[in-house]
Image 1: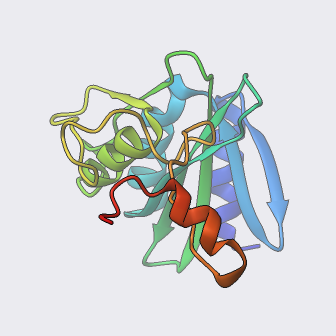
Image 2: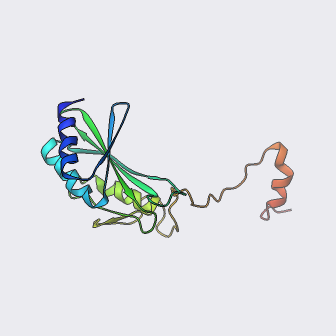
Image 3: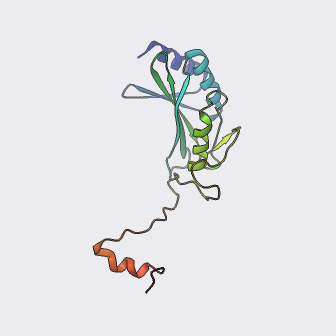
Length: 170
């Protein structure tokens, strides 16, 4: 393991309640929502993780606690290393603090998390929809979001589909 990566992980383990997972030489740290800003600042300022390369969420529904994980992927350009932070968030009133003060590109990522998953980002400067229309109801990447699709017509179900189409003019 890279010296910078091991020392940064050790520093976080010493100062915070962290659970480490390693898979295929990729390190993930599961951290508390209240610690995300402080840990990101430590990684940026002391260990040169100067790029937020991605920020997304995962829905584990029907699991309730935690229902979501917010996943931050930080990258050190100088050392060419990546560290993943995972923040466990409950399903009832999910929220995480913003990190846009540390990584300005988090602005759009955090808006996407709000828009698609309904995870509120506390302290965000402009938390509004970014992908869906403003009047849209719900959050489409939640696993319990209703699909609302139209059945595709094939030769085996053509008669059934034609019976369902009230808009077809005779």
